[in-house]
Length: 143
Image 1 (tube, one colour):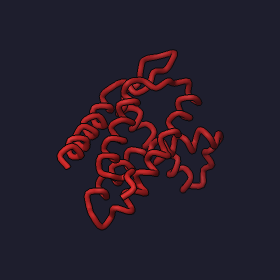
Image 2 (image 1 turned 180 degrees about the vertical axis):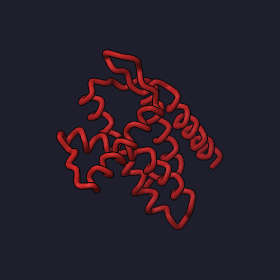
Image 3 (image 1 turned 90 degrees about the vertical axis):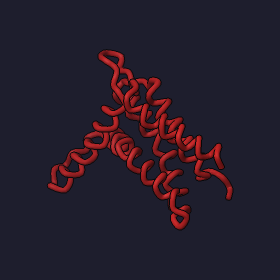
Image 4 (image 1 turned 135 degrees about the vertical axis):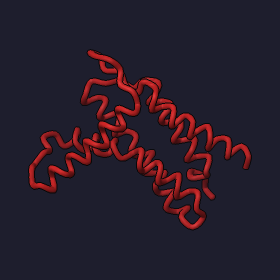
């Protein structure tokens, strides 16, 4: 039990610190930090939803749009999964949310490809932190 608690904290430390590390590196300009990636993708999706609600068609490239939309919601879904995992009654929902988080990660790679970006240390630490925090709570165990 103590080892799991330590993994949760190490996962959270990795997760939070990843936002201050270089997450992606474009080939033609300065590297982008994790908090910039999180901010841009989340607010892109909110802005696109706002345009859609006003009846303004805004989807010119569906693969790019959907991958950016999914990438923007990884962090909120991760936090929800971890919070749900702390309550015994919501364990099944936490397990589903944890699986959704893992399945959402490849959307980032599509965004990287479409925008000529490449993952850097912050991206790797971000994924490692999420996996550690979710796995240490037993979300991927057979129990």
